[in-house]
Amino acid sequence: QVHLVEFGGGLVQPGGSLRLTCSASGRDFDPDLMYWFRQTPEKERDFVAGIDWRTGSTHFAEDAIGRVTISKDRAKNTVYLDIDNLQPEDTAVYYCNGLRGATILYPWGQGTRVTVSS
Image (tube, rainbow, N blue to C red; front, side, top):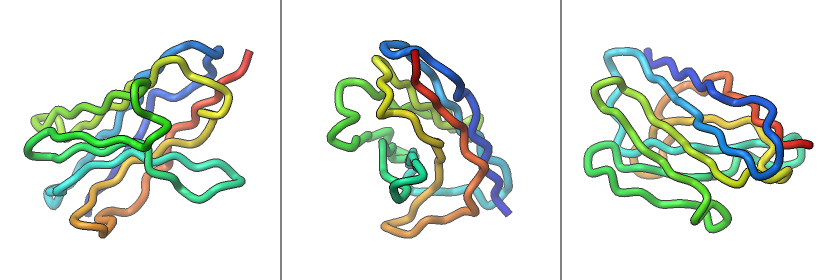
């Protein structure tokens, strides 16, 4: 079974930056895509950014464009999410998962909490 672990969140002041890390383990880890999502108590789990696991092609939610970078290290089964100019509305728990088409492949990890506040 594949296990996903997200870390790197924390308390950040508005305008700050963070790098979130998603580490996958398990011999069945073989996604087509790796996505980052975020969730608040008021909303569903929303897409933030995605990366093709083989080609590295990326795509982003509209409100992430210009502030978010997604990258991968296939040798380490790791995906990164760099967020710049964090704002209070970025406060959420951030999760990663693998996809094949529109299908979520793996059990959800615990996520990593990002709080943006002065």
